[in-house]
Image (cartoon, rainbow, N blue to C red; front, side, top):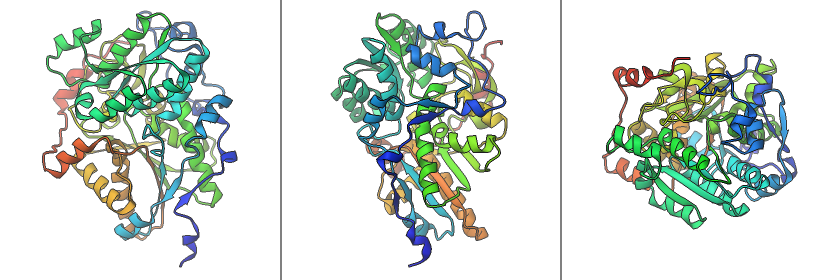
Amino acid sequence: MTAEKKIPYKIYLEESEMPKAWYNVRAHMEKKPAPILNPGTLKPVTKEELSGIFCEELAAQELNDTDAWIEIPQEIRDFYRMYRPSPLVRAYCLEEKLQTPAHIYYKFEGNNTSGSHKLNSAIAQAYYAKKQGLKGVTTETGAGQWGTALSMACSYFDLDCQVYMVKVSYEQKPFRREVMRTYGAQVTPSPSMNTEVGRKINAEFPGTTGSLGCAISEAVEAAVSQDGYRYVLGSVLSQVLLHQSIIGLETKAALDKYGIKADMIIGCAGGGSNLGGLISPFVGEMLRGEADYKLIAVEPASCPSLTRGVYAYDFCDTGKVCPLAKMYTLGSSFIPSANHAGGLRYHGMSSILSELYDQKLISATSVEQTEVFKAAEEFARVEGILPAPESSHAIKVAMDEALKCKETGEEKNIVFGLTGTGYFDMVAYEKFHDGLMTDTIPTDEDLQKSIATLPKV
């Protein structure tokens, strides 16, 4: 057995090594992400304005771009201990299958009941809602992982949870929906006829399968129309990337424990929560001039906001009721095809990641879903985990990079985020196995139609 085999298959941190504070990468960005704007005044939103939608503490975190470290409350750390620290896994079997000299590692976030990384922020947001004395929260969900995580967190704190689930996912993933209901959540397919904005979207796009932008609009309307409720979001927002930084902090601590220096770090990108959380501490090192990494965002070819979008102010939702954010966007009116990576069907990208991409600190690529599922199947067969379609985008590119190392003979350390499991995505796997899965890539004309509707800011 070679010396490198001393690195275990799973690198675990001790409970005492779990981070006690989240890392706010904005504090070390010389050029900060552009401020979010009030759509009525086109001026930067204030904490008071945001507090009408979000919990007060979350509004403060959203606007905080100066404090590098924000303490994780003890109650949240106590909850984290049920499933954290999560393992960093050396993919020895995948390396052998690919016959690559590269060393492949993945941070596995699917080892909790919700099945994904989303619980890291869900429990934080539910905690702050409970601390404020609210009755409940509203939200949207794409693939259902965020809705599942939030329903679990709300159950823990005895909060009402109302979830607007993108209609195509609501229909494709009934078991994910039922997990939410098991935890007490009310789940509504979006766009629905329950809200004014839902009725408007249905009238404008008859028969639409929905999008995250649609569901966000409905959830926000539901929150502001009920006393004692606030809206919470599972991706895109800076507060969410802050909470998810625990992924990257643990990853870096695990690598450091064995003296491993990552060459590249890869994550799927929809709104940006998992990628932002995974790379934040590594970006911090780059910003401080301490290290250099190749950071790759992987998005679906059907919804390519970074690789084919424009960097501009846009509404965060299709109904245009949310603040404006400067981000890489396809336009808030863009409705992605009903592909199976439901959690990546968002028209824009996190303001933090958008700014990092614009500064060329991270790169981006897009992949077609049939190729993604081929990679997912190969990974499942050798590593023993059925990956979520979203995570499988990162798997695809990690495998591609490992094969490049096979050609060059380079022993690079490749790290990717395995954000969740795919056991509720069997309709997608079924279509792939039956040869019924197709690749839908929007034309330039399709994108220009929605981009042309961007607000004039």
